[in-house]
Length: 58
Image 1 (cartoon, rainbow, N blue to C red):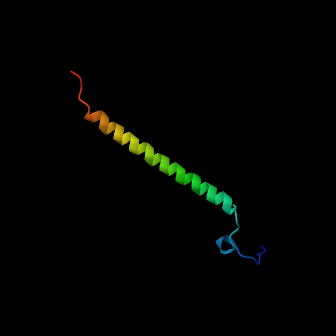
Image 2: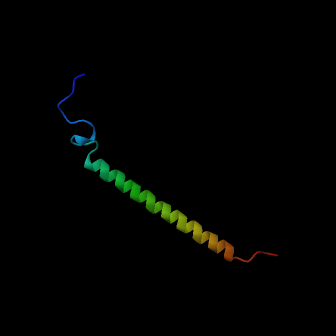
Image 3: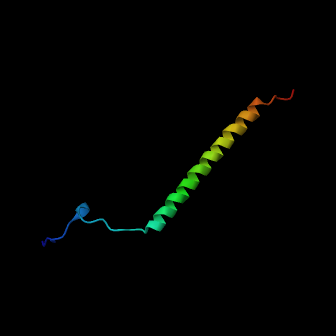
């Protein structure tokens, strides 16, 4: 069995896998998605409260 002289496993230098533009684009899209999800939940809660506040017709 021959051993290599270089670093093995997680001890080596990390390789760059994506450009900074791609990283920023992914972060921006995740931020927009999180904000839109919060808006949807807020609107759902408000509409539910408004519906429950209405009197039922008898």
